[in-house]
Image (cartoon, rainbow, N blue to C red):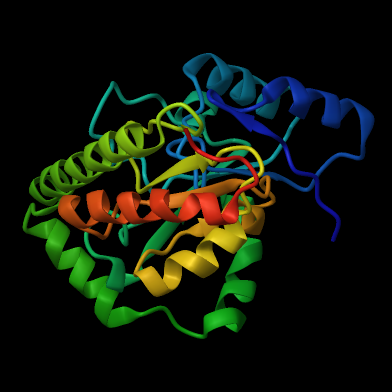
Length: 259
């Protein structure tokens, strides 16, 4: 099926552009969006845009699938209302995951749907994976019953903040000036725009043997000089060293020399 991409900026999904698309094209089946700490850019939809998007969902009967796996791993700033909360769940479907808040190996998530949609999805879901992962679901249930989620969230937020800070500090030291990057207040990723003329795919080919990896932005439809950097796994010291190595390799993959 055909689909349209709605561009992002520092305040998240461009609602003006979405409105233009709705006016000019066929009515979409639904809009898929990650409003909070978006993957891959790490940006968050502003509250003003959230309210406009919720209003669009209501006034245009626009179905929205709000994917929110990172919302609870905010380590800076105030939480924003979800689209689901703002719209009331009539046209907004909400999904999230315990893989980001408890442990990545669990692969347990959930979705909140209007009843009429849930009924229609049951057969599709059953035919797709036959049965859910019952043991890991039971593990999550027991984890929640014991009241361990909030303490674990505090631990995860602390670790992610420290690693995010290490990456921002290293980027400022090594690439401040010729490059730009997002500054997420939570989540797992940030978006890096390398100096103009840099080929991120070429850079990855040079960085991998040096023990540094990232995802080129072109894999997400981004510009050739963009990249997604994850700060969720490596330690602060490893992040610092990784950014240093990456910066050393950029001139060989760029037509613009760093000062």
